[in-house]
Image (cartoon, rainbow, N blue to C red; front, side, top):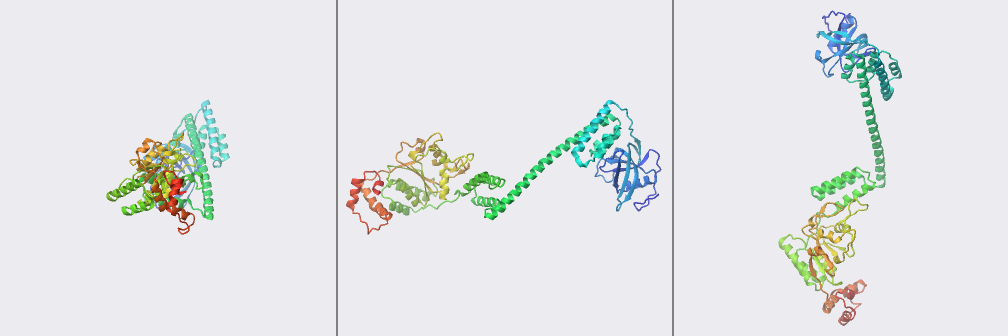
Length: 557
């Protein structure tokens, strides 16, 4: 009978003896005795072996390959143990692809190859299923059935109840092993070991070991899948909620978190900060992107990022270098105070010559009302700087100077950086008023915190506790005021240039009243110079009879 599947005439035919069979090597399928199976073939050698079997006893020997990738296997590529198969049916699918249905009858071992061309023929011997029933065998069989039942329960509907029942009622140990192997996809090496072993107790021991291993792997797989499912459910829930938040934000006209991060990065790039600061801010932006925008933590991170981006890192005002103009401004706004004016003009002179100089830290010391605070405004005007002021009277908490660490609820930067941020310039004139009235308690010493800010050798890297990044204060012109130097801590006093501002004599008060105070009061009360005239005698009477202070505050009142 010539099937002629290949549409070629292969005349070479091998006459086979009783223990000789055509061999077909199978890729990745392990067949077990007592089962019905099918497989597809397309290789010329396999089809020729099939045709030869069909013309004879319809018996084949099936064995698996060591490597499925090998397309043209040789003897060394085929495993030594296999099964005998009785061909029940075959049919051509398309091209050279043929589907074969077989009954697997027994286990066997390849003893030798009779031929390798044009198809494999092997001499094989049956592996005996005879054994003596022992107590060990009975116990091992019970364990096998119990383990398989556990395996089937984990697999659920993938293993039918009929299969489980058939295995539970099997009496023969070898039949039990073959049925279990047919329903559990063991690794090729494990299946070959079980297939080739003759001793029934060793086969059962190996089987139980392999089933236990599969059960452990299945449980691990289920555990991982449950975790993945839980994680996916949470991600889907989070995505759904975030999408709702996004839609609501669009309805309310609020900004998208992605746009906020993009704006932050754009501003950060424009500031051109150092690499360390840029990396720290970028890290905070990345954190912000990973948490819901409406959460309290997001608000804390946003405030931190915005504080850094709003600081005047590279923004400064142009300083006046016209000494004549500066002198005119000081003279027009203040009478007397020649020491202070002279020191400011000295500073501007050196700046004009050297183009760079660390700003002096002036400490104006004098009685109340002599114009210490107002002269500071005039100095800012004369030098072309912005004017900012911070009162230190009664301050007792170090955190007010250096800020609170972000670990505290409601933390914020210290007043030094907050005031500079409000000024919008990194070179303002910063007045620290009443520095002699600093206090201290269990919360720290503000005077110690001021040391870094007022030290020209350190203030280029002033670090606020809240920001935890250095800010350059070396361009800031600090001016402090005090009524006395006796209460100023020595280390702080050592960093400042003290200028005594003496009280005014009667003649100086008269000139101040005439040039500044009278016109100021007339303007404040909505009058004109024509509506109110105060003669010189009246001014002198007010000075001599009603004011006995060093300054002019009571005279102004």
